[in-house]
Image (cartoon, rainbow, N blue to C red; front, side, top):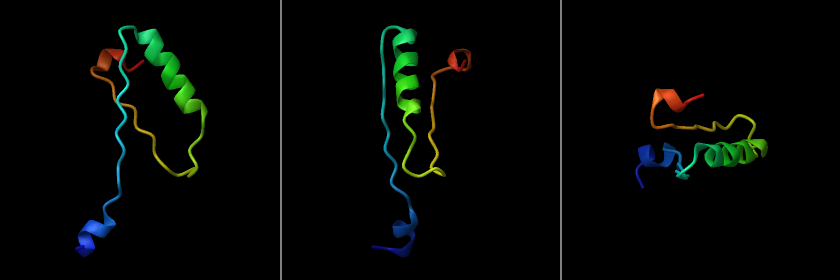
Length: 54
C-alpha cells in the first residue's frame, strides 16, 4: 500500500430518504442525539437544496 493511501481516512456515507420531511427530521434528531465516540469527529448533514436546510 502506498504511503499516501494509508493517510486517507475511510468515510461512511449513509443515505436516508422518506416521502415526508417530518419523518426525516425526526430520524435526524434521533441520530444527532447520540454523541459520537470521538468528540472531535465531524458529522456532516447534506440536504438537496438550500431551502430545506432549516
